[in-house]
Amino acid sequence: MERMENKEVLNRIRGGLVVSCQALCGEPLHSSYIMGRMAVAAEEGGACGIRANSPEDVLEIRRNVSLPVIGLYKVEYADSEVYITPTMQEVDAMAQTGCEIIALDATARPRPGGVSLAEFFAAVRAKYPDRLFMADTSCFEEGRRAVELGFDLVGTTLSGYTPYTRGRSLPDYELMERYVRELSVPIVAEGGIWEAAQLRRARETGVWACVIGTAVTRPREITRHFVENMG
Image (cartoon, rainbow, N blue to C red; front, side, top):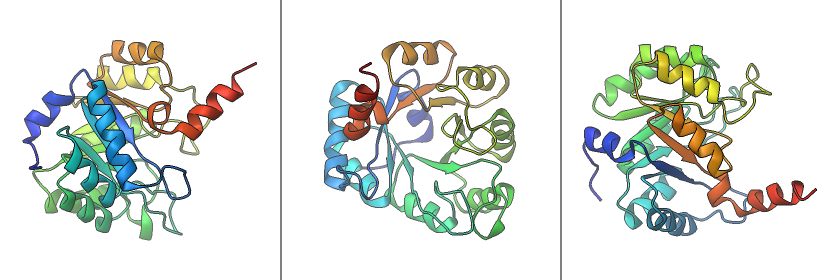
């Protein structure tokens, strides 16, 4: 499938639900084939886009659906807490898949090798001036900085997952609202959306699009959620 024009991509996901189809190594559904079928199910269910991890999964998904894909590449490095598309190597791999949006960790944490986000993204933007990049952030200061650096979209993805935001109530409606109110780029609500009522409330903040992952595509975690809430 050919990559869509940026304007079309943003229009396609506006006001809709992006489904995250991810299963990491060690999870029961870890398989590019299975993620491809998950994406088909999401498309048939009305999703406006797919978020997916790893070149293999993204390529399989793009072979199976006609939706815009937010691609990321989770790789752990010993010297950094950043693992969502952490270095240029992962950016290059995602760019080669043809995914329409590439998501990066845009938190304040140092990247592998001690590289700052500003230094890293300057190199990324110079190499890929025409690609859409989504900033996965955890707090308002990170979102504001991401816009200053030239990211095209900002997500609430990592709220509650950095040391300085741990314990925040999810979904982080407060962050969504402030982003929408004060930032000039499309905002993506992501993280902790488990129920239809939460999805509706997230949309009411005025975000551009919403992402749901675990509550749709990770049956082990879905089962645990219901077991833990049986009373």
